[in-house]
Amino acid sequence: MHVDLFAMSGDSLRLLASGSISKTGVLALGRHGDYFSFLGLPRKLTLDLAELETKFRELSRQLHPDYFYNASPSERLASLERSSYLNDAFRTLRNPATRAEYLLIVEGHPLSQPGADAPKPPAGMLAEVFALNEELDEIREARQAGEPGEALRARLDVARQPIDARRMQHERAVAALSERIDGLAADSPEREGVLEALREQLLERNYINNLLATIEREASALTAGAGTTSAATLEAQSRG
Image (cartoon, rainbow, N blue to C red; front, side, top):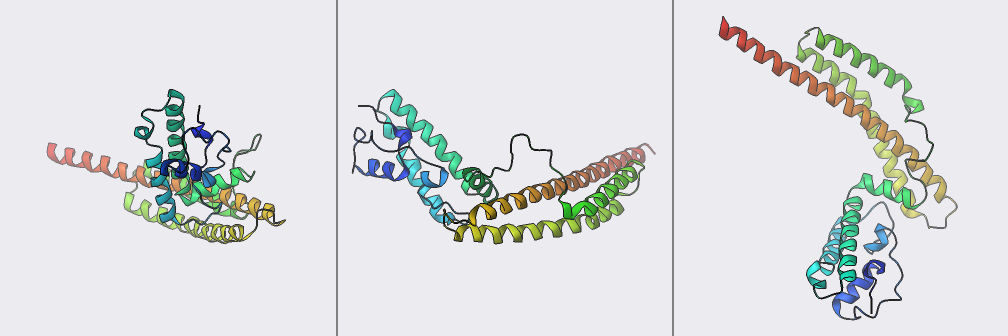
């Protein structure tokens, strides 16, 4: 009799491994759900990471190919598929950022939606984004003109400060919304509104992270430029 291992829940796999049920007695078991239910965890944004690690290791042992060495080809393939799904689930849920994005997908509020416009600066940050872009343009021009990197790095640090402050502000907002979501029942009439508010905060946070990444790239360009200048100076000195 064929056993649909890929359709088994994490709890069913634990019973299977313990010998409480046989490989041939689980045809009626329902399909697994999302990453949370697959690992036997509550669908919450705040998870016990030690519990997550424990459940991952338990299921990893139970799904190990050696356990299904004498099983049918279809069962071995199912165990490999579930192992891959388990690894994806663990990687996603152990990181708070990807966990939040995944929960929004499961709840029907994905960050990326068909037909959505390209990301725009958050309404409350338009002035800061404009000022940052102007400053970065000036720093690039100054770097190309040969202005000392030390002074330009100091300007970058100053330009970064308001963006860092915005990021911290969003982190606090995300934490507060996450706490609210975890405290709401699945059928609460408030839940949809709070989930959408979290989605908006994550979109803005991602935009802010992109701004910070742009600043980091400019800092790296300054460092690379300084290295090139130093090498050229040493070569000139050696020729002299």
